[in-house]
Amino acid sequence: MNRTPQQADPHHPDVDWVFGLHGVRALLDTPDQVRRLLVAEGRRSREVEALVRAARDAGIRVERAPKRALDRQVQRAAQPSGGTSTDAGTVNHQGIAAERHAFAPASERELEMRWPSFEEPLVVVLDGIEDPRNLGACLRTAEAAGAAAVLLPRRGSAPLSSTAAKAASGAMERLFIVEVANLARRLQWLRDQGTWLTGGISDDAGVAHTEVDYRGACAIMVGGESRGLRRLTRERCDHLVRIPMAGATQSLNVSVALGVLLFEARRQRALPSGSG
Image (tube, rainbow, N blue to C red; front, side):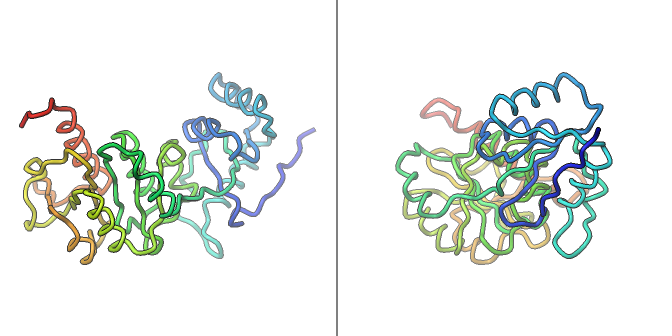
């Protein structure tokens, strides 16, 4: 006899969801974050069953339910409180979802305490990314590039939600993400620690992104989808860079642009000492 899965309030501040194989697999690396696993009946693939075994081995409750019940659950989780979501109809849960304790970013105090342990860190600053899917894509890019930390402003940024987590494909749980109250002040603090600040822009005020030295302690910053870097952020930058475009397109998606900048930094940082 099928049981209806326990209904949790998807907008409770202590509850969040991760959807899909990659996100759930990454989340199970830190099983203390997981409250339960929800699996659609009939999903018996090798990948799903491996995740079910891992969850049970970690003492996590696993519930099976009709696919339509899982659809409803994840769609409810994708809806903003008090409204409807354009994401809800496009969620691809792949027959599996994990309910977890809501993701909590690190504090600025934790950043200050951990900073001495970093050696020539590569830091990413996301100045007001408003689309959670873009935020998740940026986090995925930052993790792939080996970023030591990601800084997000407390206001004016998309939440670290289940939508962002799915787009990040597990990167959110692996990154050191810091929520910042006053971004301009924290950027000045980074400069005081000897960090060079490079901001990516789409106008002609910047130099080509390949003309900047990214070695040593370095922070790479990109701005929101519509406005780019805010004025106070631009004013803190040591360098403003642009990515030369060959076609008629004037700008790149923010996560793509971030990837171009980060992997140019990685290329330079991999060069032997003294190389140009």
